[in-house]
Amino acid sequence: MLPRAYSRAIAMLIGTIVGAGIFGMPYVFARAGVAVGAMHMVVLTAAVLLVHLWFGELTLRTNAHTRLVGYAHRYLGMPGRIIASLSGVLGMWGALVAYIVLAGTFVHQLGGPLLGGTPWVYSVAFAMFGMLAVAVGLRLIESLEFIFTAFIFLAIALIAIVGIQRVDPINFSSMNFRDAFLPYGVVLFSLGGVSAIAEIRDTLRGWERLLPRAIAWGTIIAAALTALFAVIVVGVSGPRTTEDAILGLAPTLGQSIVLLGALLGFSTIATSFLMLGLYTRNVFHYDFRIPRVAALLLGVGVPVGIFLIGRPGFIDIVMLTGALFAGLDGILVALAVLVARRRGDRQPEFRVRLPAVVNYLVAFMFLVGMVVTIRELFG
Image (tube, rainbow, N blue to C red; front, side):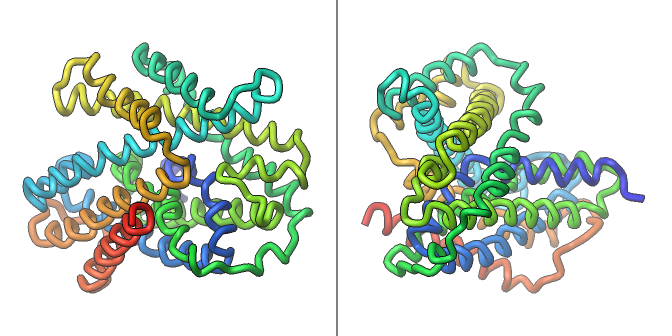
């Protein structure tokens, strides 16, 4: 009989993966075409699954319990530590900026008809309140995280149940090869769950042999939910699909469904922002030994500043964050596990039995994705 920790481990990974990125998926699917988006989804799900499994193997080959920065330092030296640290910090900043943008959109959908204003104004207000909340700590939110994580699943279920009856197959027929690469960074952002793997290993202490199964099921279920959400929203909204996925549903599903979806989406985004903001502040305070106020300004103030100065779009920031920093993490994991197979100090309960050339191919794919994304956004 499988232990309760096994299902909890799967749920942890699904909860980590399914987040803000899912709201950007329908837009890039609609722009590039569902068939093109589906190809990105299949290829990147396979690549991310390998990265998750490699990271699971990496944790089992090392007695010391650490995170990606620690593993990169141990097996790839100081360059690995520096790259992992930069990737981690910049990736967290990018995610926080994305949360600010999306939160403003959702709050505008909820309060704009009565209060007026623009999504940007609501994003600024959210960022200020969010930064204050992170400064205070908000331990209550941390203890209720699992409740708010469930909200996004309610939103998916609600839109799927109501929307599947209004899907128009003609919305799946178009393809735009000029935007063929558009889904790459968004899909990669939406599927990343490396940060949860070490915690899952701890959850399965004594049952480490179940780790690859938990990783596989968690990654595949999360990818399936994400794809289902994208396909149904595109099927309902078609060319009217918006960057936040929700607003474009109004003409077909009605304003009440949009408001409920926006409420559930905002609850998820707000909680994610607070949790990641707390974590980012603590990284600067405890790991880099920066005073608490300066750590708050670096951890949360910098993303707020990026939003205020740059006014980035949700899709652009998700594309960049996913392609660059999720891609860098994937490269580090793919290379570090090869070194760990020679220098690890623990016999793992499983290993990914694929030739090393697969690691190099996946790393090369992520590298190409980084280059192409930069060219698409800034070229």
